[in-house]
Image 1 (spheres, rainbow, N blue to C red):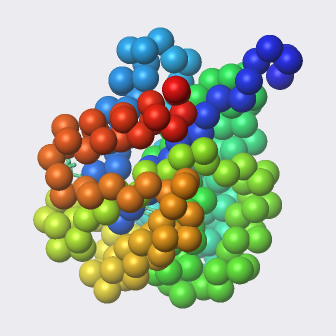
Image 2 (cartoon, rainbow, N blue to C red):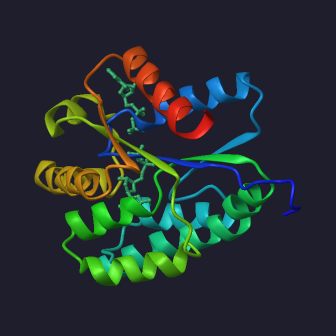
Length: 209
Ligand code: ADP
Ligand code: TYD
């Protein structure tokens, strides 16, 4: 990084499956691209050839996977993506939007599966090269509404059921309470356009102005 290049901003989208994250992440990307900002989009698990191979194993494996193996694979995929894609871009001054990042492991493998959160935080710290998002949007909807929005073909984790998704949602709600400056709680049951307007105002206020 040259002295004149400042690090790009890192924005993440989080929430239970079907909450509308991808829709909002793509709309924000399009808006910021129109403003001629240098910006890229990635999704987790995935976003790089090695991470995409790990994604297939994680979401479509027919074998029974241990909860700890699942957590470690999520974080292995993240380490690859962070080192090879996210950090090089940020250090070049490019902004990055990620559809899920480290909070997903705390919410799904910690909140959902019940793995020890201190252990997960430590491995996440290692796997992210200590990178933290500048801003996170937690798109919050009820489990019932998410269930209606999700497609019929579901991956291994989406098949876990409503109680699992409720624990994940509760984890995100607590995360917003613990880190209100970073983790913005957005009511995902509003219209797509209303949510987009709210998100763009927060980005302008917190990261652009
Ligand atoms: P996620 O990435 O969180 O799984 P998606 O963005 O793929 O969710 O959205 C899941 C489905 O819900 C899609 O069919 C999408 O068009 C729809 N959807 C997204 N946001 C809303 C909203 N605010 N109101 C109604 N439907 C929505
Ligand atoms: P994906 O199809 O990308 O779902 P979504 O559109 O809801 O993001 O699948 C990702 C799945 O992996 C999703 O169910 C959440 C889960 N996941 C974890 O359990 N832990 C993690 O660390 C990450 C990144 C994802």
